[in-house]
Image (cartoon, rainbow over all chains, first blue to last red; front, side, top):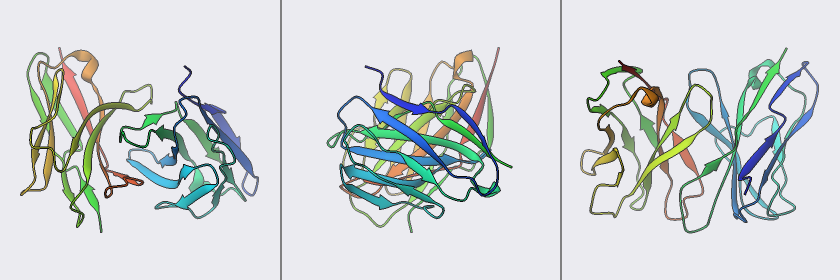
Length: 112
Length: 115
């Protein structure tokens, strides 16, 4: 079991560029999450999904989009990158009956 | 609005001693849950312990225990017999409601264990 995998590990974007952060889990979890962690801060929820085809906004969704076409994959799309989106992005998943979330290793994104 | 507060930005503890990391929360839900996660300097998020709002006993996992005081809305993490490897950021988090779809995190406490 690889658990939750994220690609890329690091990325530098120029202002206005777009990119997709990939997240895949092999645990057949229905629930998946995207968080961002700004320096010295806790995690803030961007988007979450309770199953394939179902997504919803979290605390800080502006500037991001998600899709969930399969149980395994939950990509996060950044359109028109801005310096305020410089952060570490974590993907996580969990089972329906267990509240513990399993986290990926994170993607460190810098927008300059 | 739901909120998690961790008032200790940094804590020091001597190796082999116990340490308590504070967490208070605010919610109007009757059903909720509280977590603690550890984030070492390598950056990954490691689940430590979970307490449901209806659990009568305080949760324990090895050297970690969660001191849950519902009336005071506090969920402090107690680490017994601290080890050098316990030096890390610790985050308190709360799931919302029965479905638990959303989880909110506190700002964290950085723990330094001294040899």
